[in-house]
Image 1 (cartoon, rainbow, N blue to C red):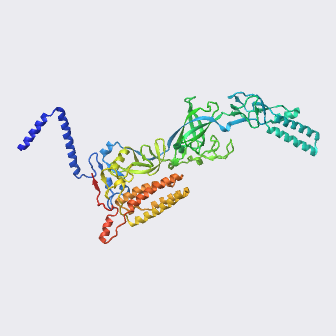
Image 2 (image 1 turned 60 degrees about the horizontal axis):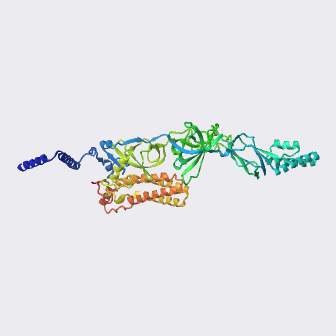
Image 3 (image 1 turned 45 degrees about the horizontal axis):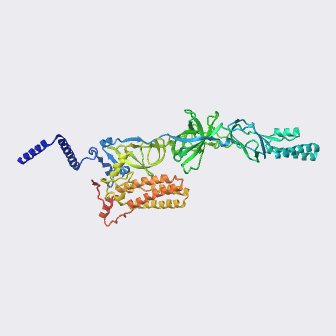
Length: 627
């Protein structure tokens, strides 16, 4: 006791000698040291798994499936499952959203400019060689009507042709009836046709016959009404047959040529309505319909030209005007487009403005109308299944070609989440379409998913950055000696029945390999369908414990490969998917098929092997904890 009192007096003297600031620092250090020591001793005490300490991660979900017959089913055996205390989950600010089926609207924004409608351009050319003695339209921009006179041309060839007609008419009259009369009439018809081909109208030919004298000049008339946009000759020029004199454009309808990015092409369809504005008329919205989508991308800009037919009755739209447009695509399942105005209608593939409620012919070109369903639109009898499965854009973690979501496990006693690799479709506004891997009604994490993935990686489980697990630092490790360096997982013992079924899967993989080598897309898709069917024939009930967890994780990724492969359209995509499939098959061989089952020497040995079924070749029955 004296020594204790002496030590107390020394500490009191030392404390009294400290300044106020030094006392504050010493108090903080002592408090932190006491907190750490208290936690150290508290960590050594065994606590019920249902009530882990505040802010600590519970590993009960990871333990749920170890040992024969343990767990509550295959889904509880997930290698990507992680459980938190309610306090820890609250601190992480985790938010979820429900996977749902709904039509989503994707707004595609485009830029472009106004251009002439090429089908409404006409060229005024010289039908006969000669001299331009008069140009009635002597500057560009003049509005002309159909039938207006444009050019007065003198032609020696035309003069000779008129002389032939006059002579033929005189000869026919002199020959009268009979066979000779018929010959004369044939000569007249031939002379008339020659003048008609040289550009004279029937009225002009009739006047020549009545006068009995040739005219020295030919008048050329406008074939359409519009605007003279080019004047290529001057008065007094000599022209040859076919030389251009004017270009006339009908601007009552124009084309708008827009640039669409490669990623937006999936949402564009022939006949879709496009709304756009111009700088000249702010606030005024013009409308047109897509008439053509260029099948070839510009190799420099990586865009495709989208041509829109736009009515322009009032002439507000001028060629070379810049426009800003948008297309609102209501997306259904399979990437189809829902448009109430086109649903169940019939449309002309040459003129998208021709839309009819029933089959028939186009009133402009006479082509047979086609149903809008053939062009990728949803039928009017769309069902609930036509709605796409969607998740918010903040839900998936995307790295390279992989997409990972964290799904909240329902009915878990504590906040539990499970990582899952899925196959995404294209993005539509604030949503991603889901092709495979999720079901309607499941809850996916939309906020806090990066934090979840970091915790999973720390525990050496498969995550966004470590697909096979491992490489994440300390924490809880599964049996089998823990994850190996570089993310490799030790191989496990599996039953002979599972090996036989897995061997059938490997043989089907070779079928896929040969199909990819052939380059035949139909054969490749069929091979992936066959691989998918063989995959479903592998029974997970033949595995237990850690082996089952490995197989379920592998099967998830193999199913994703099948979904991509059986719908692939391009050979380079097929090769990329096959490369990914090969990585997963190699992992199957390495983790589940590399270690042969030991021979049973006695009944006791057989019993022990059965108990170790599904465990790692060197692991004890219990999980290891590495801190």
